[in-house]
Image 1 (tube, rainbow, N blue to C red):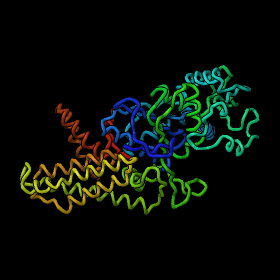
Image 2: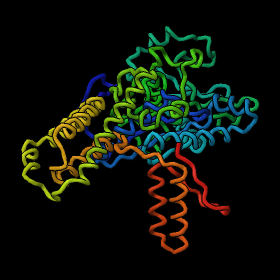
Image 3: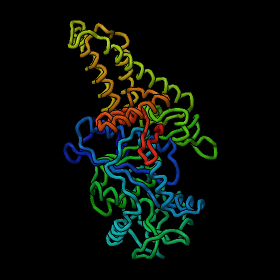
Image 4: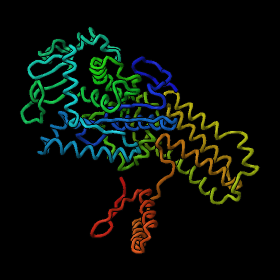
Length: 468
């Protein structure tokens, strides 16, 4: 399996630090608003990477943080006249709703910045003791010139960086490229006690601390958006490796940018879309499918026409699978018959599966992997009818589900139930509960959940709503 490593600027054969285990850290959101489509891309991309590793029988420990204290969070709290923690709590919850909608597997751990302050202080103290950081006027800075390989991830030369920096930005710094580890308290802002006075940590230190605490000093993969390469990930490397004297991450993965109608996404241009806005017209499934139709390192252009094309493509998969379900119901032979064996000997299913795996093992080329799924659908549409056995038709359905599942694509379209049908099923469930047939009641509840209908048992009776 080959992965493009940003650190070396080339594809490398993937070899985990510990056999059959992978420690993976992905930079998470700053929780002050609903996630936009740019935030959704790394969510989907690195969930897919994780899923493929798990398919290859790796035990994946996946950590993604919440930045729950930040200038943007404080500003939003002041605008709404609430405590900053109410803002961060609200948008962490909203993030998890969108994450679930996009079929992203929950992280092994979601650490929060505010719960790791003591560990951040400990790392800052260590960096001061080792001569990599210095305190001045209640602030602490990392001295980049002390870390000789600073710039190795972004391929930036320290002298060039310094020449391009505005020295007037902060006269406290010894060098213009030094970055903040601890910032002093400002009036009206939350703060924590430290050896350098009340304040709060800088942004970069939190990921170094969380990765170390939950994954170890050296991890297999660190990932995030391309915009994080410099300065965030560069600074993470500097402070982590200065503290531990070990390589921080073996492989660095970064997804490309998203443009909207061929323009950079920004609020000022009015082309800034949250995931919630998009799901008013298109489903979460379509957003995920759209994102995976391009290689993760390539820039991707978002437009209504392109996402509609993705919706049509996903429908082709759903329709192909539904046709196979119909054939399965109407097939006569239970086990393989002579017609099946002719196709089995051609080994088409295995060939398509191998093609899918080859695409994924070439730096997670999901676009080519999806082409393999379409090839499987085309093969079944062209060749399979009810004269084939239930066994062989079932093999094709199983393979479609497996390949779609690796990509996190829902292969079976959810049926849309009418309100009358929902209420009838709820009544049937209530009667089953009265009869103490809890197995049937649970089955009905689970069937409704699979169709996107969520039940809430309250004192006033059963309430339901459609899953967003």
